Image (tube, rainbow, N blue to C red; front, side, top):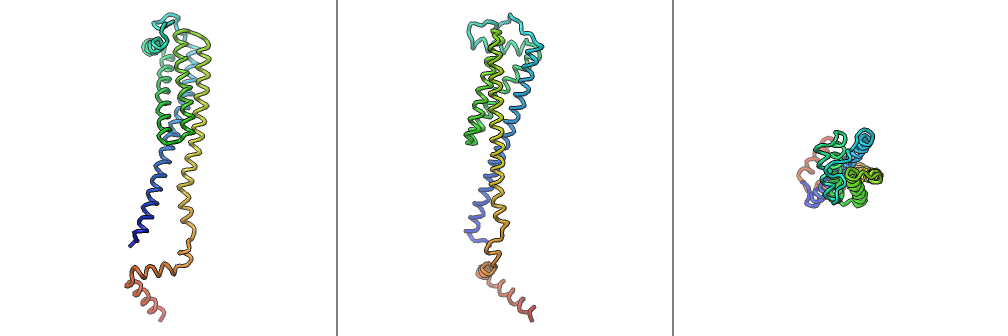
Length: 223
């Protein structure tokens, strides 16, 4: 039978290990999402280059030269998704997905209390949002500086997510090292293992009958 103090230590150790495993899994999940965002950003960049080379946006469409900037942005997105070329539709749809994904990643980083990662993905969200606004502005007004700003915002977002990914990789390795530390500590022989007499005495106090039977058997074999 284990003593109450031993049970309490065992329960505390199990709770600590469970919490560390849960934290590590959450960190790994966030790391995978950040890596996915980088892949999606790469795909978005390639689609943007394809649109720039092979798609001609008509000068006259329902939202071209809109007097109201924000209403013109929403109407341009609707027009592209409904009537735009295929590459342009994919470009805009993936941009909307990236915007939603950047918000999700930022919320997860905030929930895990990782300030460095949160700061990086927050900058990434700003870059993606800035690229989306400038992309819609380019559709409506056709200004070349909007295209340049869109590419700049993409570079900022990509760099931010690379920094976040590196930080998360280091965090996973740190969490795994902490969870392995108690195991390495238990592999070393303790004082009780080197000197078994205190353990034998403790067992004798807990189970005197069994200890007496073991002594009688040992004396019988010695004879």
